[in-house]
Amino acid sequence: MDKNRIEGTKHEVKGAIKEGVGKITDNPAKQVAGNVEKNAGKIQKEVGKERDRQRDEDERH
Image 1: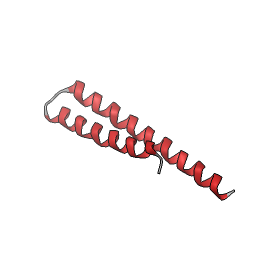
Image 2: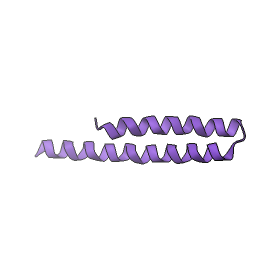
Image 3: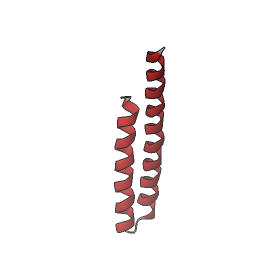
Image 4: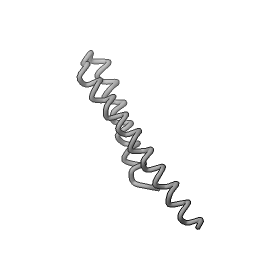
């Protein structure tokens, strides 16, 4: 498993928590920061998935 998948998931969860705290505390800046981190984590996770797919494809040939 590519490390980007793990790191991406970590950022996705951390961002979701930060976003939730921002909602609870009525802090729009924290909400936005959490949303940005969450989405960056999703992208990073997808990069890791693609790298895994490429590695699997290379191993088949």
